[in-house]
Length: 341
Image 1 (cartoon, rainbow, N blue to C red):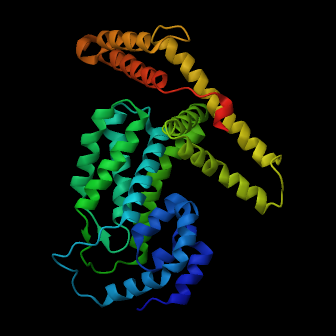
Image 2 (cartoon, one colour):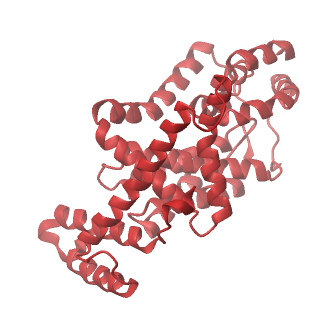
Image 3 (cartoon, rainbow, N blue to C red):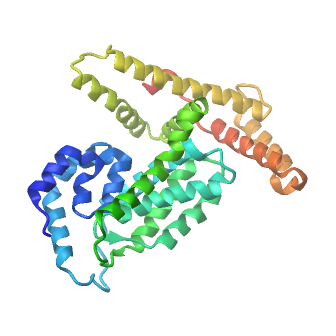
């Protein structure tokens, strides 16, 4: 049955951020992406207003096709590539918050989460990519940055480049009952939100620490690019500013904004505490020089490398990861609080 444009716009207006219009058009990957990101943070949902006619035409055209294009490669899309990198980072951050306590997290869980995020964007619309090659690129990149939260960025870029190189049109398959599609989407949604919900409800204190650490590490990525860093801080404040405007509050002294400022200040104070802990892990006093930090790091890595402690592998691996994390924290430039505003 042909899809209607008015129905699509109605579903976009009523349940757009939840992907209802994409579900109606048979774009299940896009629907799941919107469910997990609330319509791309709302921006993707608004931007789609102008794209809905082409989505409807594509859905109706697919119903009339008997076979997918063969030997034809979809055109390269910079927007899709950027979305793959962003969603890959997003999936990685969620995994870092909810699954980082797992053994071999940086070898298994992190590249898997980032790779699946990239593949989800690659499967939007009538395109897809190679599953094995994309995940393979993620798993091969992960060991290079083992134990470092910044690994999310290069893993996502490598997986996105691979997904673009192996992009292709989807093979046409017979339409499935709505109940089957909803069941599959429900399982995928639970797989994404389940670990995060468990961490938030059953291990709240640790989850808050993970959120603060991840939040702070994310901001530290932009320490060498002040303009981009300020832009990211503005984006992080944006939801509360919008909330203030919608609630009719004016000025920067609203309670919502103050609460967000407290949270933001907590994140940076957490970063200061993390630096103090890093000094203790490396056996240094605050204010140690870069040379002292590097020398202590090299000595401790030799002592606690898992390959040199086969009789106490688990303890050695724990110390090794702590040393790696402490060195990364102290290697990042520290900015005064006033410059972060």
